[in-house]
Image 1 (cartoon, rainbow, N blue to C red):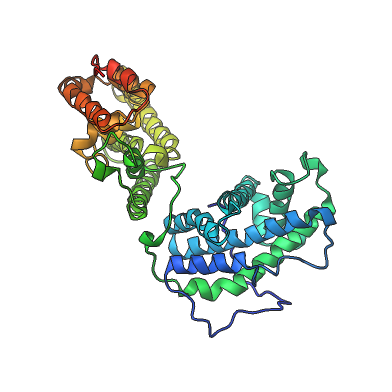
Image 2 (cartoon, rainbow, N blue to C red):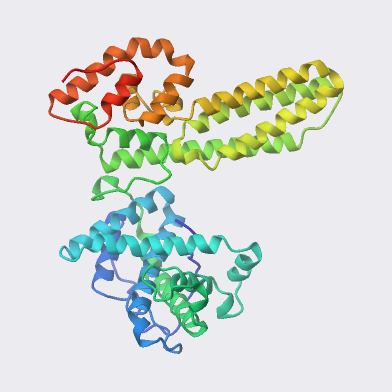
Length: 438
């Protein structure tokens, strides 16, 4: 969700304040609906978006108002993330445009709000691309020009699709300063208004959410839910996917990622601390081989995480290369004849990873991701190119595929018998040397 712009502050000069007697909702979705109502009705704190001491050009005022109010929403979701975690925060953010659609059913608010929130997320991502020195300075600002909001204002004026400025150097300093001041004031008002509201939340019921959006970096379990969702290749009952299903999948996918990341960090630390002792060469080789074996298992596990594991792949590859290189350096002194064996083993491992690039290839080994009786349904969800690579490159599947051909034919026949025509199935079946007559 990007940088977490939520720091305790007092909104000086507030004309309104949250009542201490408000009975704030304790369930997350009820709180989200209240947030939507306040936004839709232009109620405090969304009325407090402008910094009067900084003049705004008249033709830019609508852009400033939309942008700053969207930033207030972004601040709320960032604060929720800090309190309850990334999975819940993202699901609420994805649901918010749908809730706004209920308030304005004739105005297509879903896409508008979605785009406003996406722009805020991109601005936060832009902030994270700044140098360490710039980010550190922004966290301890001494002037408006050194605040996080100053950098956000630049992005929101220079790269916002709604902005009239085509080139970054067209952004006037005065208007960047005005927007930064508005963002700073509105952020403070938001924190002041919603701290008690967020503190009251102690439950999250995913079943209450009206909808979800598929994650761009989904994990293996969410991927299989997407395969099943309204897909006539699967039995009717398995085509039904609920928000609760998606929530549970994301929790487990996030747990997988966290555990693999921690394992990589631990192995990296152990490799950095390896010290020759006693019969140092033999002991060192044994330790390094153990770590390389652990890394190989982790690489296979990460490969099965779908897009969720993309950030871990280069880390695992680097550590494995480090361990293998260390082994070769020691063997050059201990037993040079074994060095080619290590190099060949690494080459085989690299080829195996390249040959098995499809999501299915790795996830099929995990019954907690793809149940055994859905293996062929899942395979038919892969692209023609992916299936071709799996069949031609995965010798370990030869016997499995030869036995599975009748099942593939049955799956397609059942889908067609139910009146479903799915493009590309003939090409996929042809890869296995089979076809289904119409």
